[in-house]
Image (cartoon, rainbow, N blue to C red; front, side):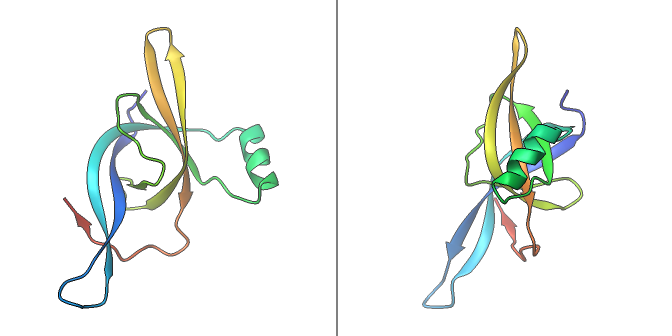
Length: 114
């Protein structure tokens, strides 16, 4: 179920030192195993109707502290912005969270700090 890989959860932060130009960085706040899901036609159709695009859909364990303003870096280095967070029930005793991801048009030249 969560066998595709390990993703890194990040938040965008702005930092500056001694009056220098502010620099945006990604600060890591968690990691989670994920499973890649197929984007259904109905979900894709609704997204296009709302003039947005869904690039990837992944499922992570329910206990992961996902924030809606998060960024996700997958194992291959691809960067995505979390567009929607949807809790789902996989089985009677297993809950998960589906993340709708939108690929960043320009890869942010951001440094991941912990």
